Image (cartoon, rainbow, N blue to C red; front, side, top):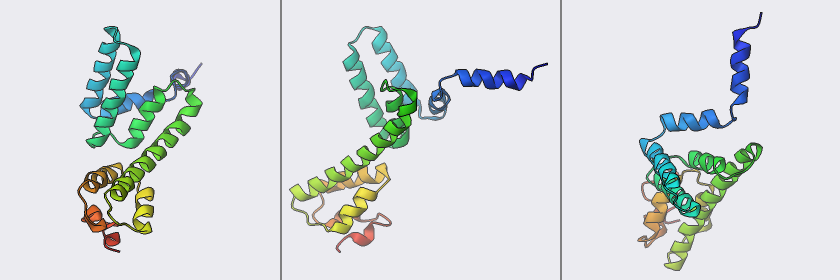
Length: 166
């Protein structure tokens, strides 16, 4: 006699390995993500060119990330899942995407400060490049546009506030 758990485990192995995580994200994630996916599917069914649908989808993901509704790790996982890569490469791709994303935001902040002539030291440079918080980097980017001193950028930020005015 076979154990019913064996059948259940067998059927779970037949599912794509990332499908449960994507379904959980849809269930537990913001309703705006489900709205974005419905919009994307509707656009595809209406025959809108694939590159336009994909561009709108990626724009929507980034908008959810910038509004703080979807963490960068989830954005990276969704992008990896839709990248067309083999499943065994998706986790590495997602990790690389997230790391590159953080580095690009840190570089953009420093570029804006440099272009505007705002002086900053290597400690800010290091702190921004090591910052794992996309919401904080978004705030820093917004502040970099108007900051006149390094301290303006990091004011009120625990851990970075001590760097201001150094």
